[in-house]
Image (tube, rainbow, N blue to C red; front, side, top):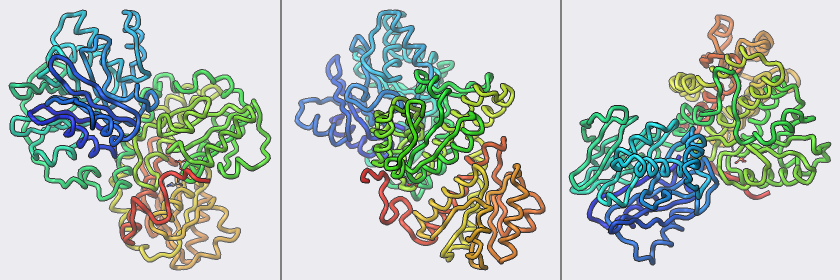
Length: 612
Ligand code: AGP
């Protein structure tokens, strides 16, 4: 996600835009920039770093103007740098643009523009858009607004975009498809932003742009049209009622809950443009140059910490099954000190949301010293691990603010499933099965939506177990690492002690813990181990344990044994581990809230462990 602001009025736009960007920094903060319209030209100031670094840059400058745009970036294409920061400008210097979203067909468009002799300054998809608008404007002799409309009709992907043109200094144009944009209507002045937080102190009159709408703001007011048919749209003005704090959390009481709900979108964003549905495979751009070594590896080592390590453990199960290649999963802190049998035929996959975890970074250094192919799965573009690895695949989960990782985990699993599908299709997994699985992955956003509707059922479980001192989480196969993840979520935000085990393991000791005060979570989809899990449930039931069962299908045998039985709707059995994670996140969240814990900043923890 990125943060976008715009201003058209009679105030000094510089400070107003900077202030607005600070309100949006929670959406992304690896680089920032503003463009201020002067007499017949604009001035762009931008740099890598936080908004406060940009503020220091403009503080002593003489830049002034009453029309401008601003952007704070969460990089998806092109690492955080002064050059890749927004706004981006076209080859003639007449257009400048800020963008939130992903232009999926940017490489195709870029090639077309390069054939026209247009050179590019950056690695971003956004620059392609501003160059395209300019090329249309100059070649087809259109108006500013027409050039924007024609260009956006050629784009595949998502955008919240705001553009200025020095030929029309008293105009700002904005458009929305897949990324939010809101217009603040002041007294003779207009504000634009990704959400209402920067507007609240100036106006409560807002208009939310809908999908496929284009907005023009100028001296004679504002106008909104439909991109597809240029039809004028009359929109009613809404009133902002939320407080600033609530707006940044988007009506959610905590960032963690917001990020749990964002998974409906972030899983889709992570797979966007990568699934090839009619072929039942995937295209993973970030590893194209290393496919041979990846497909012919002697083994894979997955190394990570915490939640990312749990994702790696799920990856082990699915990669071994699909790719037929041995997968070892090592805590990064162990990987870096163990005498491992790794060499140039090894692929070492580092998974890290922050891309800055010290142990994981050190593990990568060791792998490189041993000539392994290193492969990063990170959520922060341009982070240390993403830069240190030979290749990689970014998750597109957007900034994860809550210390307890949620949307990054399911995004990591999405990447691992896509990698397994790719390798499986090279290893005998049929096209028919591949098509089935790729559609199931494509539908995950809808399944998440259904699952989020069971939050009240999860709250009921939390209310009944709020005084528990211990929790057990049990699962088999790829659900065992999900059990570990559920236990970690609970531990780190509610401070209830919790452990995850392979379900069969309880007979080898942990069953001694079971009494009528012990809640036991079972992950029990109707897969090949279902009957065995049912026996484990009976063993716990016989000792008066409190049974909380998550299954893909409600059946009478589970109803008879479970104190709580919750259905996790899946469209393909293999996706149960990804989807079953979400109710476990909600369970931890509700228990933490009921116990009065600081959900977003739990005691003793940090969002990124950059120390060893
Ligand atoms: C997860 O909820 C924790 N916050 C923690 O275990 C985290 O997953 C771990 O520190 C790894 O962080 P990374 O993914 O940024 O490398």
